[in-house]
Length: 219
Image 1 (cartoon, rainbow, N blue to C red):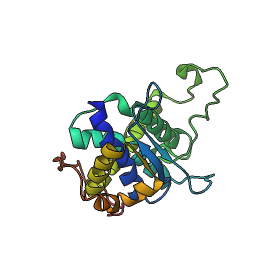
Image 2 (cartoon, rainbow, N blue to C red):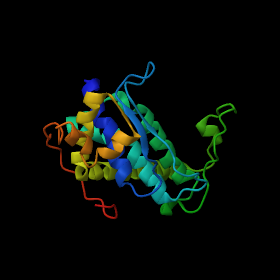
Image 3 (cartoon, rainbow, N blue to C red):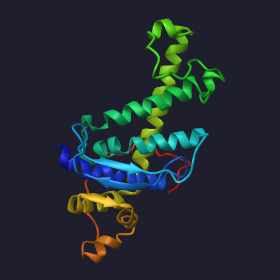
Image 4 (tube, rainbow, N blue to C red):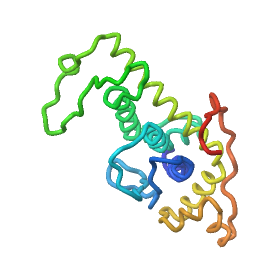
């Protein structure tokens, strides 16, 4: 059920955001309280500085954070839900921009295949707007899938390393329902639970094995 899923999905933002070294914002607030008609919980991240440019590494880290909830669903519960729908849209848009606008895929070259879409202009049919071949369109689709898969694998790898933080944060969220910046900062060390005599989290759940290790990320 979704309410049981949220406590694991939400604190993973903390675990992933804490391990991703660049391009991510610290978690300011996390809650499992419903917010509006479509949100059964939420996580608020606040930037610490203005960013006008982002590197490929920063974009990859950002996608890993966005995929944190989906990674928690698969790892902890072994099934998927519709809760990650908005995050998947954001991740797909980032990956597609990397391939078609930012020249960040070597096989596609330093070419802008698409322009930034203006939200106030009428939508143009993809077939009419596309200025590249079917073969190139296929290569773009493959590149987008690979970028997203790499980000997801990174999120899974971080989750495996930060399992204690995940379990501890889930237990605390179930009890408190909403955590602010101060409480979130104490989750990795377990200080808040220790003060309450609740060191640790719920019993660990065996996770499916990762497809492959992810080199280059802090351990």
